[in-house]
Amino acid sequence: MNGKLIAMSPEESFRFECSPGVACFNACCRDLNQFLYPYDILRLRKRLGLSSGEFLNRYTSQHLGPGSGLPIVSLTSADARRLTCPFVTAEGCSVYPDRPSSCRIYPLVRAISRNRATNEITERFMLLKEPHCLGFGEPKAQTVRQWIKNQRVETDNPINDKLMEIISLKRQRLPGPLDLKSRGLVYRALYDLDSFKNQIFANNFLNNLELDPEKLAAARTDDKVLLEVGIEWVKQVVFKL
Image: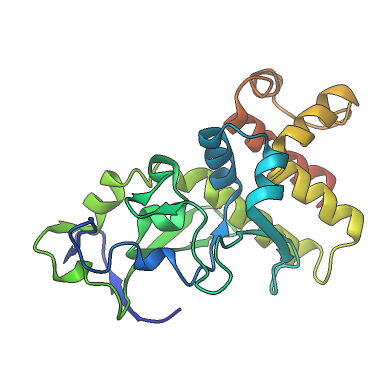
């Protein structure tokens, strides 16, 4: 990550605005290294009218997290030389209302820690000032809290934080590489939700698991709830929680 990180409290203000009138517009959509949360994939593939499998095959690559050993999904580039985001156009982001969480929160960076005893999450924010970005020269000012609210990041954070919980469980319970079967189970339950949905309801994958019956019923028609079921399924099946 090139640039300077500055710790910010929720009530601190900063100047920033991004629009076609800023000379560097779209520059941050190049030199791509875009990690995707499972919820990012859910939103993007719905906006594009694709199944989860179609979206994953067309727009992503999979690798293993160097620290966690869990499957990690990233956007593939539309331009191998410039590493351009596949969704950027001359007019800006073509999936803007459902852009990934890290794009949504930029130029802020959010970090979390979880208390093992209370399960309480503490969040910290930093301002990422990159040399290419001219948005910091714009006059508009807002606090960190205002920016988070205006970009609708708060709706994404709770379900995104559940992935951090999975990563923590992996490190505690199964340090080292996951076996191939377990990696496939995690990938399907978190990222390839259409495949997961077909398997759990058609093949009785939920037998003997402690899952909320109401949530399970809702998962048949609500993909966000289905993702929550997938996360809980991974906890119980892969990590024996």
